Image (cartoon, rainbow, N blue to C red):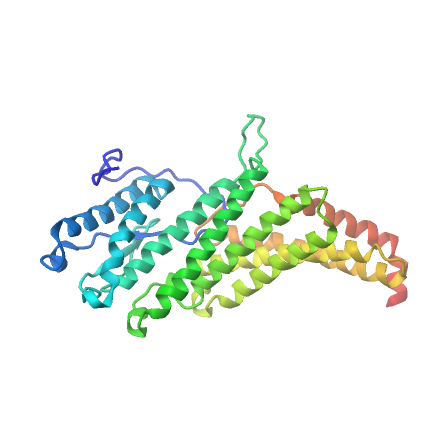
Length: 362
């Protein structure tokens, strides 16, 4: 892979208009914008090192723009090579931290978001981009596909889902590193210049949310397994609920009123409601195994609550999809494919069966 990235044509490509599907939420991808590394660093570090830095950075820009960020493996290799050289600029003893003004832009609309003369910011942005590529890869694995030509789309296999869980864990860990090892050591004056993507709480929310989505996939695997008990399924649903609740509280209020912040908020609400519906449903199934009338009454209340939450989650899903930028939700998969059928069915049957007990309780 040379510096010229000759396999990609230079110039603007025609972008196909399509509405993307979202299984794993990926915030807007940020990529480097053209920045002058040569002039500020000339004479301070070896010229071949300056050339290599500029070359790798330009390569990241070119590949990202030409592929729309889909060349994940190639972009990751280029970013890792770039980071191995960039790390030297961040060391205070070298005195090179504030010499280069690093510029980044949004991949989708090409709008330059901000420009910061700080190598720590560049390090944070590059590692953040790796995390977003990892989330994007997990999303690609989880989008159902029609492998047989039958017109029915399914997620490939259990192995595919486990790979997606591993990617989500990796993305979450990468974002935790960004927060604790980079962001925490930057001065408030530098942080003031950051885009909304790096506001306090946003990176934490995405990191926790990735754990929630990994748990969602694990719940789907548990539903498909005959060995998984109701207690295990309830525990996974409760863990998912906790993760999305924590992610919601991490998001700063200032970032959720418009644009992508608003869309991000609706995604978390949608997944929170789904997880809560699942938790109530499995708790109800466990209670319904009891022999006391009170157990059945409480179980029916859980089933009815789960049914109401499922309806709310459908509305939240629709709002998420319609909030700009417009996206599509994929066909039902995992635990929700099962629960969208079972929850209304069980709620109706059990409320009829134990309706008299509910009346007595009232």
